[in-house]
Image 1: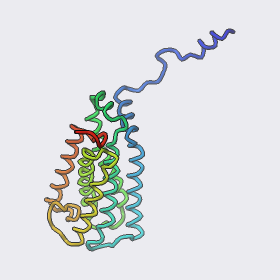
Image 2: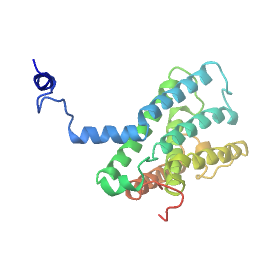
Image 3: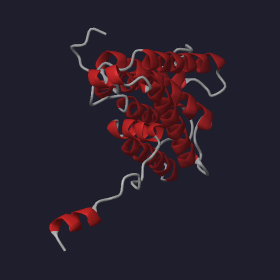
Image 4: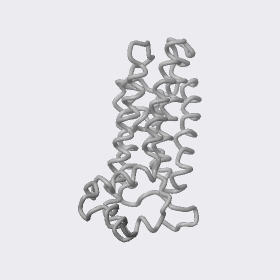
Length: 221
């Protein structure tokens, strides 16, 4: 047996390799490049933290102070979603990917849904002040702020706006402000608060899809 025959026998016949459809492969590469699998695990950790907070009573059961810790966790989950907007490939990816806007859109929507599901699962069977509807509204609104921030700072710094606004809303909560634009401190049935949070989320999704996050701070766009 010669060396040539050994190489010919070990070679994989053409067409026998397992190949995934191009759309699935592109989606998976997009998610991996933005560390979405790790982000999902982090969102699950946020849900576990909320459950621990409620189970061991690390927050007040009623009154304005009862909203502080859930608000912080919701803002943290939204910040995680905003950070996944970061692209390690920058302008190269923008120039070559015609499906990129759709991937950005569906990734942001899917992660928002995962965040809401994780936090609601963490609150199951426990007393959550203002209920899960307020929690979902806060995640939606904070995520919209993060997506908007990514247009200016890039994905890696997109956590600044949702976390900063969360700190401001804690002050608004303690001061009993009632303006609709302070939606994180409003009751779950407040229509104005829902409108504000939903508009912020919708605008953030739209601009993220059309423009995309800033790739570096020196960009003009």
